[in-house]
Image (cartoon, rainbow, N blue to C red; front, side, top):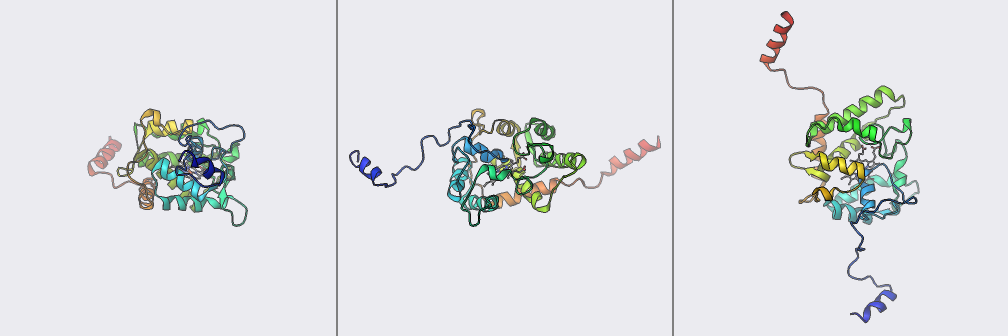
Length: 259
Ligand code: HEM
Protein backbone atom coordinates (compact mmCIF):
# COMPACT_ATOMS: atom_id res chain seq x y z
CA UNK A 1 0.00 0.00 0.00
CA UNK A 2 2.85 2.35 0.90
CA UNK A 3 4.32 1.85 -2.57
CA UNK A 4 1.00 2.19 -4.35
CA UNK A 5 -0.08 5.47 -2.69
CA UNK A 6 2.00 7.88 -4.82
CA UNK A 7 0.77 6.10 -7.92
CA UNK A 8 -2.88 6.35 -6.91
CA UNK A 9 -2.52 10.02 -5.98
CA UNK A 10 -0.76 10.75 -9.25
CA UNK A 11 -3.56 9.00 -11.10
CA UNK A 12 -6.12 11.19 -9.31
CA UNK A 13 -7.75 8.30 -7.45
CA UNK A 14 -9.54 9.40 -4.25
CA UNK A 15 -8.08 7.86 -1.12
CA UNK A 16 -10.26 6.22 1.55
CA UNK A 17 -10.31 9.05 4.15
CA UNK A 18 -11.90 12.14 2.55
CA UNK A 19 -11.79 14.35 5.69
CA UNK A 20 -8.98 16.87 5.84
CA UNK A 21 -7.21 16.65 9.22
CA UNK A 22 -8.19 20.24 10.06
CA UNK A 23 -11.95 19.55 9.88
CA UNK A 24 -13.53 20.66 13.17
CA UNK A 25 -10.58 22.82 14.22
CA UNK A 26 -11.50 26.49 14.86
CA UNK A 27 -9.51 29.13 13.00
CA UNK A 28 -10.41 32.83 12.94
CA UNK A 29 -11.52 34.15 9.55
CA UNK A 30 -8.88 36.04 7.59
CA UNK A 31 -9.39 39.31 5.67
CA UNK A 32 -10.26 37.51 2.41
CA UNK A 33 -12.66 34.98 3.93
CA UNK A 34 -16.36 35.60 3.36
CA UNK A 35 -18.68 35.61 6.35
CA UNK A 36 -22.41 36.37 6.53
CA UNK A 37 -25.41 37.02 8.78
CA UNK A 38 -25.79 33.41 9.95
CA UNK A 39 -23.82 32.81 13.12
CA UNK A 40 -23.90 29.05 12.58
CA UNK A 41 -22.68 29.02 8.98
CA UNK A 42 -19.89 31.40 10.06
CA UNK A 43 -19.12 29.04 12.94
CA UNK A 44 -19.05 25.98 10.70
CA UNK A 45 -16.68 27.80 8.33
CA UNK A 46 -14.49 28.88 11.27
CA UNK A 47 -14.35 25.22 12.35
CA UNK A 48 -13.58 24.13 8.77
CA UNK A 49 -16.67 21.94 8.59
CA UNK A 50 -17.45 24.28 5.66
CA UNK A 51 -14.82 25.81 3.36
CA UNK A 52 -12.97 28.27 5.59
CA UNK A 53 -13.08 30.96 2.89
CA UNK A 54 -16.91 30.91 2.93
CA UNK A 55 -17.11 30.19 -0.81
CA UNK A 56 -18.45 27.32 -2.92
CA UNK A 57 -21.08 26.12 -0.45
CA UNK A 58 -22.51 23.21 -2.43
CA UNK A 59 -25.29 20.86 -1.35
CA UNK A 60 -22.67 18.23 -0.48
CA UNK A 61 -20.68 20.74 1.60
CA UNK A 62 -23.78 21.84 3.56
CA UNK A 63 -24.99 18.28 4.17
CA UNK A 64 -21.53 17.18 5.23
CA UNK A 65 -21.19 20.11 7.65
CA UNK A 66 -24.59 19.93 9.35
CA UNK A 67 -24.53 16.14 9.67
CA UNK A 68 -21.03 15.91 11.07
CA UNK A 69 -20.99 19.05 13.23
CA UNK A 70 -24.60 19.14 14.47
CA UNK A 71 -26.03 15.64 13.91
CA UNK A 72 -28.74 16.86 11.52
CA UNK A 73 -29.98 14.27 9.05
CA UNK A 74 -28.99 14.62 5.42
CA UNK A 75 -32.48 15.51 4.14
CA UNK A 76 -32.57 18.49 6.53
CA UNK A 77 -29.24 19.55 5.05
CA UNK A 78 -30.77 19.38 1.56
CA UNK A 79 -33.75 21.52 2.61
CA UNK A 80 -31.46 24.15 4.14
CA UNK A 81 -29.34 24.21 0.98
CA UNK A 82 -32.36 24.49 -1.33
CA UNK A 83 -33.70 27.44 0.67
CA UNK A 84 -30.30 29.15 0.48
CA UNK A 85 -29.75 28.82 -3.26
CA UNK A 86 -31.89 31.89 -3.98
CA UNK A 87 -28.94 33.90 -2.60
CA UNK A 88 -26.83 33.11 -5.67
CA UNK A 89 -28.14 35.35 -8.48
CA UNK A 90 -26.68 33.09 -11.22
CA UNK A 91 -29.29 30.96 -13.04
CA UNK A 92 -29.05 27.24 -12.20
CA UNK A 93 -26.45 27.92 -9.51
CA UNK A 94 -25.13 24.88 -7.65
CA UNK A 95 -23.55 26.74 -4.72
CA UNK A 96 -23.79 29.95 -2.70
CA UNK A 97 -21.24 31.95 -0.72
CA UNK A 98 -21.53 33.40 2.77
CA UNK A 99 -21.39 36.99 1.55
CA UNK A 100 -24.29 36.35 -0.85
CA UNK A 101 -26.46 35.89 2.26
CA UNK A 102 -25.83 39.52 3.24
CA UNK A 103 -28.35 40.99 0.78
CA UNK A 104 -30.91 42.81 2.90
CA UNK A 105 -34.51 41.57 2.80
CA UNK A 106 -33.70 38.48 0.74
CA UNK A 107 -32.84 36.00 3.52
CA UNK A 108 -31.21 38.54 5.87
CA UNK A 109 -33.96 40.41 7.72
CA UNK A 110 -34.66 43.11 10.31
CA UNK A 111 -34.95 42.44 14.06
CA UNK A 112 -32.22 39.80 14.28
CA UNK A 113 -31.21 38.66 17.72
CA UNK A 114 -27.56 39.57 17.22
CA UNK A 115 -27.39 41.93 14.27
CA UNK A 116 -28.44 45.55 13.86
CA UNK A 117 -31.07 46.40 11.22
CA UNK A 118 -29.52 47.30 7.85
CA UNK A 119 -31.19 50.75 8.24
CA UNK A 120 -28.68 51.58 11.00
CA UNK A 121 -25.60 50.31 9.13
CA UNK A 122 -24.19 46.84 8.79
CA UNK A 123 -27.02 44.30 9.19
CA UNK A 124 -24.90 41.19 9.02
CA UNK A 125 -22.01 41.37 11.49
CA UNK A 126 -22.40 40.58 15.18
CA UNK A 127 -23.62 43.64 17.12
CA UNK A 128 -23.22 43.57 20.91
CA UNK A 129 -25.89 46.22 21.56
CA UNK A 130 -28.51 44.30 19.58
CA UNK A 131 -27.50 41.05 21.24
CA UNK A 132 -27.66 42.59 24.73
CA UNK A 133 -31.27 43.62 24.01
CA UNK A 134 -32.08 40.00 23.13
CA UNK A 135 -30.32 38.33 26.01
CA UNK A 136 -31.96 40.62 28.55
CA UNK A 137 -34.97 38.32 28.11
CA UNK A 138 -33.00 35.18 28.91
CA UNK A 139 -33.43 35.46 32.64
CA UNK A 140 -32.01 32.14 33.81
CA UNK A 141 -29.50 29.46 32.80
CA UNK A 142 -32.09 27.50 30.86
CA UNK A 143 -33.64 29.52 28.04
CA UNK A 144 -37.26 28.45 27.49
CA UNK A 145 -39.30 28.73 24.30
CA UNK A 146 -41.13 31.65 26.00
CA UNK A 147 -37.86 33.47 26.59
CA UNK A 148 -36.70 32.92 22.99
CA UNK A 149 -40.03 34.26 21.78
CA UNK A 150 -39.85 37.25 24.14
CA UNK A 151 -36.44 38.25 22.74
CA UNK A 152 -37.75 37.95 19.18
CA UNK A 153 -40.88 40.00 19.83
CA UNK A 154 -38.90 42.63 21.75
CA UNK A 155 -36.43 43.02 18.88
CA UNK A 156 -39.37 43.41 16.47
CA UNK A 157 -41.02 46.04 18.68
CA UNK A 158 -37.70 47.91 18.78
CA UNK A 159 -37.38 47.85 14.96
CA UNK A 160 -41.03 48.71 14.38
CA UNK A 161 -40.74 51.66 16.77
CA UNK A 162 -37.50 53.20 15.57
CA UNK A 163 -36.68 51.88 12.08
CA UNK A 164 -38.86 53.62 9.48
CA UNK A 165 -37.94 50.94 6.92
CA UNK A 166 -38.87 48.05 9.23
CA UNK A 167 -39.84 45.04 7.10
CA UNK A 168 -41.03 41.68 8.37
CA UNK A 169 -43.00 39.52 5.93
CA UNK A 170 -44.72 36.20 6.62
CA UNK A 171 -41.79 34.43 4.94
CA UNK A 172 -39.35 36.23 7.24
CA UNK A 173 -41.46 35.17 10.21
CA UNK A 174 -41.02 31.51 9.22
CA UNK A 175 -37.24 31.95 8.87
CA UNK A 176 -37.10 33.83 12.15
CA UNK A 177 -38.93 31.02 13.99
CA UNK A 178 -36.53 28.53 12.41
CA UNK A 179 -33.57 30.56 13.67
CA UNK A 180 -34.88 30.33 17.26
CA UNK A 181 -35.52 26.61 16.86
CA UNK A 182 -31.92 26.30 15.62
CA UNK A 183 -30.73 27.47 19.04
CA UNK A 184 -32.65 24.61 20.67
CA UNK A 185 -31.49 21.87 18.31
CA UNK A 186 -27.95 23.26 18.27
CA UNK A 187 -27.36 23.81 21.97
CA UNK A 188 -30.27 22.57 24.02
CA UNK A 189 -32.84 19.88 24.67
CA UNK A 190 -35.17 19.33 21.75
CA UNK A 191 -37.66 17.27 23.79
CA UNK A 192 -37.99 19.93 26.51
CA UNK A 193 -37.81 22.83 23.98
CA UNK A 194 -35.18 24.61 26.06
CA UNK A 195 -31.61 25.67 25.40
CA UNK A 196 -28.48 26.51 27.36
CA UNK A 197 -27.87 30.24 27.86
CA UNK A 198 -24.11 29.92 28.46
CA UNK A 199 -23.61 27.89 25.28
CA UNK A 200 -25.83 30.22 23.21
CA UNK A 201 -24.06 33.38 24.40
CA UNK A 202 -20.62 31.89 23.80
CA UNK A 203 -21.67 30.75 20.31
CA UNK A 204 -23.01 34.15 19.22
CA UNK A 205 -20.14 36.13 20.71
CA UNK A 206 -17.30 33.92 19.43
CA UNK A 207 -18.82 32.28 16.32
CA UNK A 208 -17.42 29.09 17.75
CA UNK A 209 -18.95 25.86 19.04
CA UNK A 210 -18.85 25.95 22.87
CA UNK A 211 -16.78 22.76 23.17
CA UNK A 212 -14.55 24.23 25.87
CA UNK A 213 -17.67 24.75 28.00
CA UNK A 214 -18.63 21.07 27.69
CA UNK A 215 -20.93 21.28 24.67
CA UNK A 216 -21.36 18.22 22.44
CA UNK A 217 -23.49 17.88 19.34
CA UNK A 218 -26.99 16.40 19.85
CA UNK A 219 -26.84 12.74 20.77
CA UNK A 220 -29.93 11.92 18.67
CA UNK A 221 -30.32 12.88 15.02
CA UNK A 222 -32.21 16.14 14.31
CA UNK A 223 -34.83 15.82 11.57
CA UNK A 224 -37.47 17.97 9.87
CA UNK A 225 -40.20 16.80 12.28
CA UNK A 226 -38.17 18.14 15.22
CA UNK A 227 -37.81 21.50 13.50
CA UNK A 228 -41.51 21.82 12.60
CA UNK A 229 -42.66 20.81 16.09
CA UNK A 230 -40.32 23.31 17.78
CA UNK A 231 -41.26 26.08 15.33
CA UNK A 232 -44.90 25.67 16.44
CA UNK A 233 -43.97 25.74 20.12
CA UNK A 234 -42.10 29.01 19.62
CA UNK A 235 -44.81 30.46 17.36
CA UNK A 236 -47.37 29.82 20.12
CA UNK A 237 -45.00 31.36 22.66
CA UNK A 238 -44.92 34.64 20.69
CA UNK A 239 -48.59 35.21 21.55
CA UNK A 240 -49.15 37.86 24.23
CA UNK A 241 -52.42 36.27 25.36
CA UNK A 242 -52.73 34.12 28.47
CA UNK A 243 -55.49 31.90 29.78
CA UNK A 244 -58.11 33.65 31.97
CA UNK A 245 -56.90 35.24 35.20
CA UNK A 246 -57.57 32.87 38.11
CA UNK A 247 -60.75 33.88 40.03
CA UNK A 248 -58.76 34.58 43.19
CA UNK A 249 -56.50 36.93 41.23
CA UNK A 250 -59.49 38.81 39.82
CA UNK A 251 -61.04 39.25 43.28
CA UNK A 252 -57.75 40.61 44.57
CA UNK A 253 -57.51 42.99 41.64
CA UNK A 254 -61.05 44.35 42.07
CA UNK A 255 -60.84 44.61 45.83
CA UNK A 256 -57.59 46.46 45.31
CA UNK A 257 -59.43 48.93 43.09
CA UNK A 258 -62.25 49.37 45.63
CA UNK A 259 -59.97 50.09 48.53
C1 HEM B 1 -27.84 26.38 4.56
C2 HEM B 1 -27.98 26.58 5.84
C3 HEM B 1 -28.29 27.94 6.44
C4 HEM B 1 -28.51 29.15 5.84
C5 HEM B 1 -28.50 29.47 4.36
C6 HEM B 1 -28.71 30.11 6.88
C7 HEM B 1 -28.96 31.45 6.65
C8 HEM B 1 -29.19 32.39 7.61
C9 HEM B 1 -29.42 33.78 7.39
C10 HEM B 1 -29.48 34.45 6.02
C11 HEM B 1 -29.59 34.37 8.59
C12 HEM B 1 -29.82 35.85 8.86
C13 HEM B 1 -31.22 36.16 9.28
C14 HEM B 1 -31.25 37.51 9.99
O1 HEM B 1 -31.19 38.54 9.31
O2 HEM B 1 -31.27 37.51 11.21
C15 HEM B 1 -29.47 33.34 9.58
C16 HEM B 1 -29.62 33.55 10.92
C17 HEM B 1 -29.50 32.57 11.86
N1 HEM B 1 -29.12 31.28 11.65
FE1 HEM B 1 -28.74 30.41 9.89
N2 HEM B 1 -28.63 29.50 8.08
C18 HEM B 1 -28.37 28.16 7.87
C19 HEM B 1 -28.20 27.19 8.82
C20 HEM B 1 -28.26 27.40 10.16
C21 HEM B 1 -28.07 26.38 11.16
C22 HEM B 1 -27.76 24.92 10.85
C23 HEM B 1 -28.23 26.98 12.37
C24 HEM B 1 -28.12 26.40 13.75
C25 HEM B 1 -28.36 25.15 14.07
C26 HEM B 1 -28.51 28.38 12.12
C27 HEM B 1 -28.73 29.33 13.10
C28 HEM B 1 -29.06 30.64 12.86
C29 HEM B 1 -29.44 31.58 13.91
C30 HEM B 1 -29.52 31.29 15.41
C31 HEM B 1 -29.72 32.79 13.28
C32 HEM B 1 -30.24 34.07 13.93
C33 HEM B 1 -29.17 35.13 14.06
C34 HEM B 1 -29.74 36.41 14.69
O3 HEM B 1 -30.96 36.58 14.81
O4 HEM B 1 -28.93 37.26 15.04
N3 HEM B 1 -28.51 28.60 10.78
N4 HEM B 1 -29.21 32.14 8.97
